[in-house]
Length: 404
Ligand code: PMP
Image 1 (cartoon, rainbow, N blue to C red):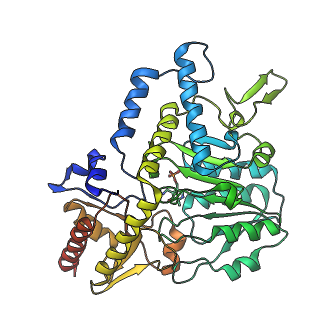
Image 2 (cartoon, protein in one colour; image 1 turned 90 degrees about the vertical axis):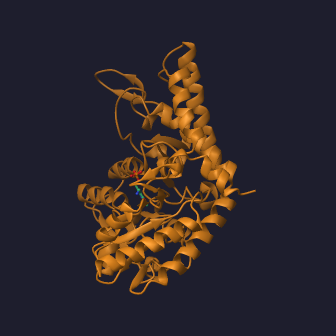
Image 3 (cartoon, rainbow, N blue to C red; image 1 turned 45 degrees about the horizontal axis):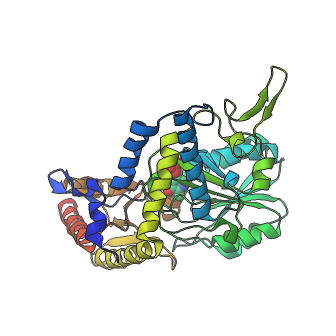
């Protein structure tokens, strides 16, 4: 049973006021809110377990290590990875992308090609550009169409024996487009290219199955899926993780250190230098348990209803245009109103307690494609309601009246 009032009661922040009005939180694409079980688990870790991991023989260190490693296995099962050592803890998607892009510097040669998509977040563009600058490889872009969908015919044309890695997001943060990643993975593999999937915007809405997808890498952030900030995952196939050099040197990632030579630890520790975000890693497992207790089918059903309702209501406002009208999209609506700067609307609706994001959403190439400075983005989570959408629509109408 999906009881929305019961679910909302799990999130203490949803009952606060902002600027004297009940909070309407529609900035879930930036970060999700946290349920009480997650907040409590952070306090429990620091009150009852706190110790460094993989080091001490003492009881608390063992307890912290066991909890951290149990979380890794929980995440392995959640994404259906074959081995738990294919699941690396990182500080977030950005860290995960940089880890792989940095590693590919030892693989790419001049004139090799890296394919990115036109729909990417800056964090899945810039590290690959830096890689290309370092190696002389060439960055090529899979184009998008007016609906905000990737053009697969062009992708097919771009693939060649020169392609060494293809990197795309599962779901676009700016437009909500769900990309045909299974097709992309299968086609890229025909040419022997690796595929990196940025799953930052997917994991709050669905459970990725990395073995079924057959992707080489899959990255995501904990904070967008009810978990703590500063947590993230990089899934990588064992063979690839063995092939890539370590990203950072330090404690924990070594087998033996002498001044002449250092040998590296086995996976996953080879990529986990230094003391990690132990509490965060453990609590990310708690967040995943929470999402699974709601059920991804229920989450998707609720979010689709919100998406359809909000799309219909917003389009009833004259002069309002929605960017990103892909057949396959998630609960994100990016829009503008004729002649009004998105920032001005965002500022007015904030005064009414409504949190939306305005700007380029770290996806400037998408804004350039549409020849706009930015959009207003409302991104819905399963704990949002139609009543909240009504409040936003009224607020946008009011802002429009004030600004026209
Ligand atoms: N990729 C996408 C699609 C995103 O939406 C985000 C976060 N907005 C990122 C990457 C970067 O994630 P983080 O800032 O958590 O590293």
